[in-house]
Length: 271
Image 1 (cartoon, one colour):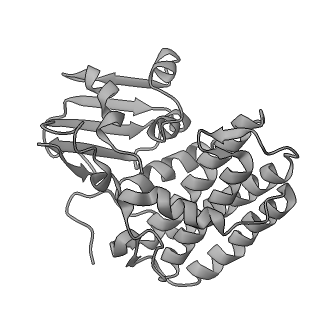
Image 2 (image 1 turned 90 degrees about the vertical axis):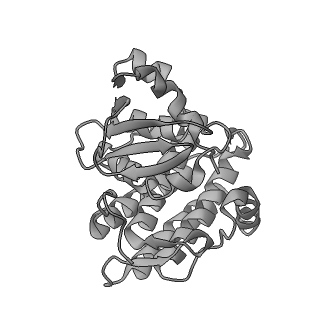
């Protein structure tokens, strides 16, 4: 299987594997150092539950990278699979959660092995590049690390190069997560860029509510959005809104319809 014409370039597998390994180690040590984990990290999960969820979802992407498929057989019902995976993690002391996250690192290395990048069955059996699956592991570790650190009032630095890789990992999934109602009748083109990382750029081309993701503009663009790496990732994951990074100069928008920047996130339906 080959990538569609004009699609963003693939991610380098060794580079993203090293980044994912570092991120898993960081979040494991973060979890190990939080003695009280009952505070809410997300509306539906405590710190402990968020760490337990991380082990399940990372394990799913390791399975994809290894060619074993994905437990997510219905992408529109991710919550049910998350609940099932969460229930499997019964040892939830800080030490044991940290050890389970650390155990994902050799499992990831074994799944990657010496094989080159290539497509494997992903969610719902849809082919997915192994490098993209590993980049999603990086994204899960970095963003849920931010959730946990924020809840525990700990520092959590998002490495700009990691943020650029995470942005690129989202691109193959976006057409499947278009919000059918919010995007209905939308005809607009967004040029979205991560500041200082030219490879982390894509055009989101909406036509009658359907989305095509292009590596570079193949036509006029209505709205260009440029964001600092960490801010871009937190906005995409709906951890923060646009107003704060815009007021701080961390995100800017321009074009014939710059106001469309405030609609972009709403055009997607989060899993």
